[in-house]
Length: 337
Image (cartoon, rainbow, N blue to C red; front, side):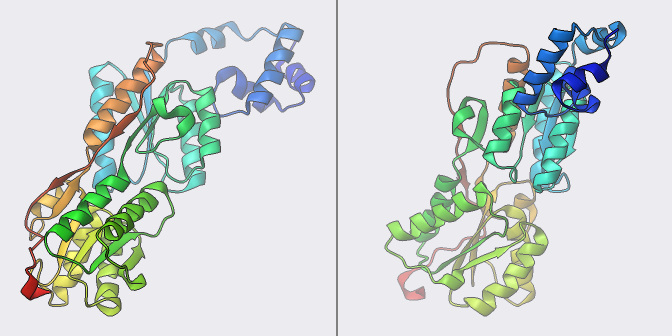
């Protein structure tokens, strides 16, 4: 009787790899899958009937790979993906990638091991090539808050460049000319695109950017606090600041207020995301509303449609940020400049 070991020897792989191919329990290179499947056919290998029946049973789960769940932005993603899963009678399996490439890969492998065919994937540190390999094996994998050209019809993302540019243009329209940018210190797409939007808006207005006006920190409250200390040391002349996200803006505001700076009288601040916190810090934060709730809802529904083999028309799924005016931006008049 042919065994799994015989298949492994013929395919030139380990028995563990054969098991992963059979059970689809982790990512395996397409060429390796082909070799194993060819060996199985050649040897007429038959799996244990009970295991085969279990594997064929419809898996009623939806997977979610996201960032740090302690961050309100990622908690919001999980909330809306879970709502879709529950409404459609699915169980949600959630893993955190922690903005680390290895952890993101391990997270994807874990979701595969749990039998998740449909997945919503918020991965910022894995490269495009790796994600494309996974997408080839997982036809119901949908990228959230990121797009890759080859699978743009399975990507749901926001125009970060335009959103950032619009926030800077708003400050310029309110009389500000010396505008700093507090951004993330991680080199992922959101950071680069929002920084590009900042630069574009300043250039379009004919305004130069001093190199000290761009401050990079961890995109957290603590990073915002550190940026607040650096801001007054590096560029005390600025009158306004755009921040990478609202939690950085919250930390920045706390730091500046502790240093005796009044907001928006002394410095205007605008955030990005419009999480719940933005409405309740003081002064209430003017920010760019990121429709991540709609995006998460859309991505979850798309993943489940693909999982159920419902035909999807090829299209781009791009969303846009919109300005929410509150209290943290003050208009400067010519006499104030």
